[in-house]
Image: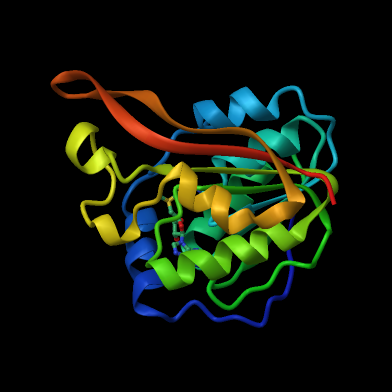
Length: 213
Ligand SMILES: C[S@@+](CC[C@H](N)C(=O)[O-])C[C@H]1O[C@@H](n2cnc3c(N)ncnc32)[C@H](O)[C@@H]1O
């Protein structure tokens, strides 16, 4: 069911290796189901073509695929992408997978009805490039959804990267989208996380935008 598109990229970089090890170490690093904000914004969209950039084990792309979307999962961890393909096969859904580094991979312009970036934490210059490429890949009339640990999570939230350098904010994301988008939601939102010590709250940047031009 799962098809691997050829990106020509080999995941040999240090960071991809770290993620490969992480994905090899347990059956599922992330949940089997979608992220709560992805579900909130994705459930009422008309199925079309979507791409999940930095998909990992593709919990989100798989959820869209099961809802009838033509879904593509991109990640530089070959192990994460391989797991995504295996899960797609087990669930009997079609999922296109691409192993690629988002800092050099350019998704086709105006191809997707939904472009998703979930918890991709990159240094500022890479973050700007990846967001600009993601924005260009949204078809007119389509949507972009970005969810990530917010900069305020460092002091006020649970978990996530502990380096301010790789954290984002709604204002930064909105500025990076430019004038072609109508902003439907741009805020810091709470997400409840179950921990060994009971429930905790993570602070997430959530930006949902509609491409108008
Ligand atoms: C925190 S995980 C989130 C995975 C997925 N989006 C989710 O929400 O379940 C971050 C993912 O980003 C991927 N990633 C980080 N930097 C990347 C890059 N430069 N190119 C491609 N993937 C990258 C990692 O391999 C990892 O799978």
